[in-house]
Image (cartoon, rainbow, N blue to C red; front, top):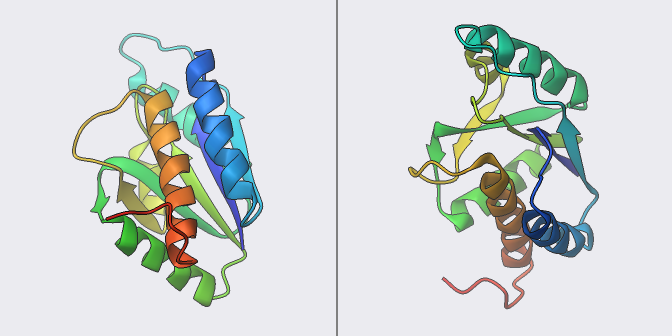
Length: 155
């Protein structure tokens, strides 16, 4: 099964890019994972919903056929072990592709979130969207090491 991390906007700070690249490289040892960035729409005051809809259209186009997982603050709050189990369950269903979808500073369009097969929260806290991307990639790597019984994960 292939994975994609599909996100709105570019990671601007070099230290975020370096950390994401580090965990992405580690994760690639286990399975193909693509990092896809779609352009962020310029925010127009009073038109936030339209901006999020345009970004959602880009996200939809960037996600390969398969399961889409929306990352939101209202999503399922799970432990790393529970996330690893959920990912294994998707793999057991023969799903060809998982797309983990992150919105930009405005979040994700509500209709787009409803169209996703699962909604996941990384934390009840609100993170900058670049940090959320880093936390997600690290957690995916942690899940893979956990599933293989490797020593990285220490609960």
